[in-house]
Length: 365
Image 1 (cartoon, helix red, strand yellow):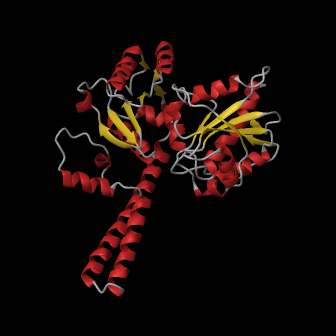
Image 2 (tube, one colour; image 1 turned 135 degrees about the vertical axis):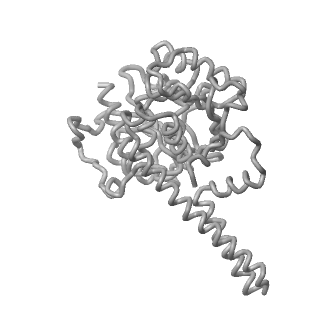
Image 3 (cartoon, rainbow, N blue to C red; image 1 turned 30 degrees about the vertical axis):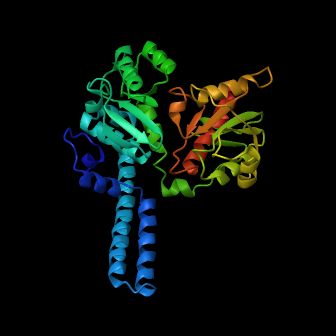
């Protein structure tokens, strides 16, 4: 499938049948496997129990079709990840033309689980936003039409923020390969906009780029480890780790292993699965939670700040946030470790978390 088919930029109304087929083709590989397995089971039952060979044949064809789609989806994601690996550097991104940059963003956000459609027709002004991203209850506006400008000022961000208010979007993202002017960055942070540069895009892409060697490499849990000229030191004083347990639901055993090596780290939940209490979640996962933050209308970053403000007075407590929704935090938040829910706490995420814990402690010192 061509990458052009990944986005919906056509001004003409799509045929409903074509739209349905596109939705089926672009389903996650896991859903294709589930449907293929169910159809294969139904085919077996129809053939041997119900004596319905025609129904069995149809079900078998459906099973084979979805099995093919599952394989195709897996190969497609492999191609996408290879593309990110080849192009995820600030230098390459800054040299891209609009077509290539749009392709990179398309792959990046599709791998993150977003559906993409053009915002031009819905907003009626091309300058406001380029795409509308949807994922579950998220409805984000994405602006990258100033991607190749050296500096982005207030006007572009004000246009994006106004459009987000009109369509009642849950968030808005502005992307550039240049930089945001200081006053624009301050205004965007104050309004809750997510401002992304090439460094942010590269960091976002890294979560999909685990190589077999990095997955097989053991995690360092010794008192020190060397990375270039930096010495990563295990925290020797208390640190608070805020975890989005609703979005980061897989790979928690790796988190438990890491926390065992960092005994002075306290775990606080910023979200919990519906109907789950701290005690119940602790017994199921083995993680020891000492508390949960209260929701804040401005996002989880402010929930964390309110929680930290209630800690005993004195030296500021170092903290790190492990979260699946970076839009809940200010752009460039150094304490944030982003995890893709589809991948969970893989080796790359654990390594980034370990670095963030050490760096947070060193900054507080």
